[in-house]
Image (cartoon, rainbow, N blue to C red; front, side, top):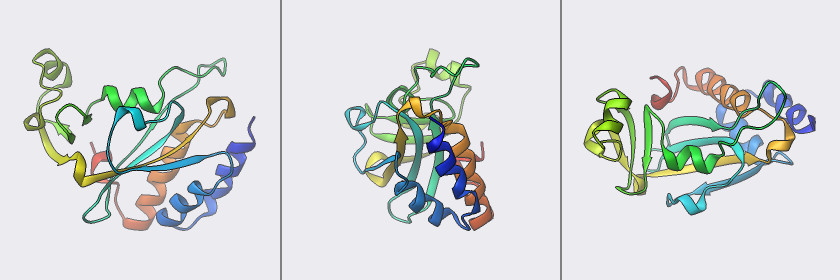
Length: 171
C-alpha cells in the first residue's frame, strides 16, 4: 500500500516545479487529467492534488489538495469532487456563476450568511472559469498517500523554481 508513496517520495530530488508536475503525471498509480471546462461532473471522486492555471499566461494560481486519513489510517470522505464543488475559503470555484475567486473581501462565515459565496464581487481577485484550466493528479485512497504531502512537495518546488508561492497560496 505504501508503494505509491515511495514512488512520489523519489520525486523529492527533482530540480524544478515543471519537472515535478510532469513526473507526477507519469507516475504509475496516479491518474492525471486536465479540465478546461469546470463542471462538478468532470471531477474525480478520489484523493489528490489540483493545480489551477491561468490559461493566458500559464501561471499557476493555486495548488490545493483533498483527502486525508484518520489516526487509524482510515480515509476521510472528502474527495476532490466534494472539495472543489462545495467551495472553501479563501478560494472558490463557482459553477453557478462561472468564476474562480481568491481572497474574500469579508469573513467567510459572513459571506455564507449573506449568500455571497457565489458572488464574484465578494472576492478580491476573480477569473472567469473559461480563463483557467485545472490539472488534477488523483489516486484511490487505499494507496495511503497523503494529498497534503504531495501538495507541500509541489509548493516547495514552486518556491524553489520561481522564488514565490502561487498567488492563491499566499493567503
